[in-house]
Every structure is written in structure tokens, then in C-alpha cells.
Length: 203
Image 1 (cartoon, rainbow, N blue to C red):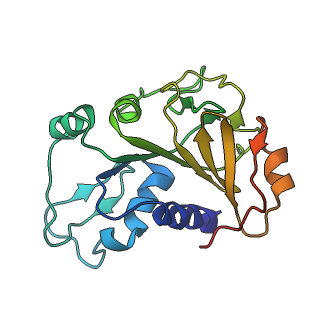
Image 2: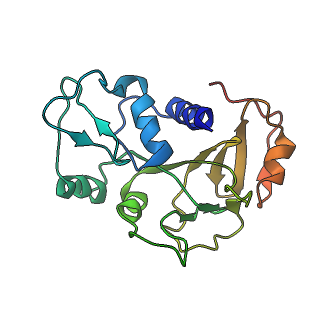
Image 3: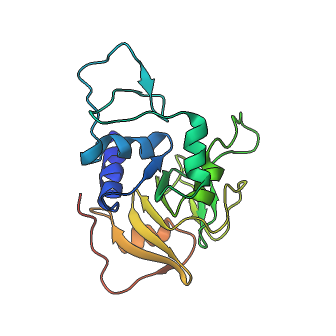
């Protein structure tokens, strides 16, 4: 549902401190970049130069914006200059393993920059639906799909909850409005660490 996408993006926005170098890839992470208050796109006019973001959406530039090529982008990533990477996921494990680039037997374009991002960024935030369209759990004890990176995820913002990856396991920090702790537990394979009452996410 569209409201879920924007609610996720808004919740993710609240988790990001000002002044960070942030990079997002496609889908919900791109909605985050468009909705963040200090990154609003000017949508009213398009000039002769047509620009697209990582989700192939047409965008325009704010005053003071700059543009750099793909080579510079990867130099920033591989040089450790990205504070936070925001990505989607097909599966995440209890130890922070990430699978987000292919499902065997389907058409695969390749991992793109995801492998570089999860290796080079200082923090990795996953923004995703808690379960698949078929209702399958996406937060698992171990990923069954090919991995993008091992032990790379720091935090998840899902359609049901905000979860932190810790050395002791997955810690439930917040729950979506109207969602119970039991709802989250039943949709999550690993046992969740819970400290006292779990507050609702403020959107």
C-alpha cells in the first residue's frame, strides 16, 4: 500500500541525523531521499537537463546541488565516505546478513552497487516490508537467498517494526501503529530481544 511506503520513508527519515552523507538505492529508500525535509525535490519545473535518481524517477536539482558521475560515486563508497546506506532487502538474518540482489531462477540484472555500499558505508539501514507478498518471513535465522553481504546490517525499519541488529541478536525497538509485539514475533523467525514495553513508532 502506498501509505506504507511513505510511512516507512518517514520513519526512516527520523532515524537519520542531519549532516550525514546518505546514499539510497531504488524503491522505498529512494522515497526516503525524496521525502526527507532537507532533501525536498523541486517538482514544479523540469529544465532542459533531465535527471533520474536510483529508482529511475525524474528529478530536478535544488539550489547548491552538485552532480557527479558513477566513477566518483563508487570512489566515495569504496573510500569510506558514505555515513549511511539505505537499501531494501529480500531477506535479513539474525546476525545482519543481507540478501537483496537476486532470486535464483529469475531474470537478474546484477548486484549493482549494493555489494559496494554494504561494504563501504559506515552504517546500513534496511527499509522493507516485514513479510513478502506471499506472506513469507523475510527476517530469518539464516538467509536462503544469495548474500549481498555478511553481518552488514545495523538497523531495520519494516512495515511492522524498528529492529536493531546487536551482537546478542535482534532487538525490537519500536512497533508500527496498531501492531502488537505478538504480531511482530509471529512474522519474524528469530527470537527477538525485548526490553520492557515497546513503544509505537511516531510518524
